[in-house]
Length: 163
Length: 258
Image (cartoon, rainbow over all chains, first blue to last red; front, side, top):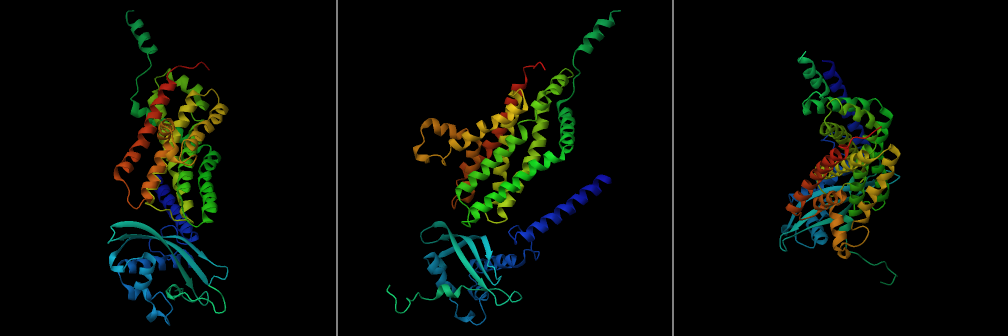
């Protein structure tokens, strides 16, 4: 009985230490669905959900991570084609993970480096691609929005400068 | 009167004790001794997250993992095993020699050391990997990487015990550790490109446990892993560690006057 109590105490302690570690790591350690990790954890979760939407070709839902004012104008299939140089229907997104998350000193801008393993169904080739995702929010109490639509804009040269 | 010589002969022969029972008793005794020195145990355990933290400082600046990070992790695991084990036989050699008169099995003795040190090694590699994952997500399956590092740590433990069995003092055993670690770096693709390896260097590389653990990491991170290479590397590490355990037993066979 005493041994069992010690074991139980140890397990509770270990779980507490793990939960603390998972929170402080910003959700880098698996959180098993618990709301741990603070703002960084939130960003990680958003990245995971975003890639999951892409994996299942739910572009409408993937667009919802953007600011409501631009949601309708976000063309995710076009962006995917630009990143992976292949049409989304010929892409099999096999795995994805968040490699690194960073939040700036103001706490209002975030970025995440994600690693995506895709299979090009035309060339029958598997490759790893790293994709940066950028996030913004108006204040620390506001929700994060993805800043992906900037990547969709055509690059235009600055006026009055040589290119 | 005729019973007396028979009894004397019986007494002079060491009593037979089942090996498994000996392993159990010796493991519990060694574990109690280890827990009896919590500061040393904590120091051994704390070095793992510290090295992991240092890795995140270095690789955090490029915000991604590279093969060199995998190599450092594998090398660190071998180092942990070596440093955990290198003093463990030599420091109690006198006790060991005395207990051999009473039927102590050398196999059971080495196995008991291996069991406790394998447990400590498992906690160390788990903390090392989690400290790195704290900042950078490594490419590949976490559990496979953990097994690779644990295998490397077991090999390091085997090397450490072997050195400890041969050494005459704790200082000499600790002093021999760089001789075990440096070849792991020298005979690797991080010294010269793999294409430039001579046959000798190629064979020497295959004799290094770090090479096999690194192979597992590379296969785990690969987009198209080679199943047989991965399986081979996974088998080599425990076999290597077991072989080193047997060599340790052989090294302890000659009795030492103390």
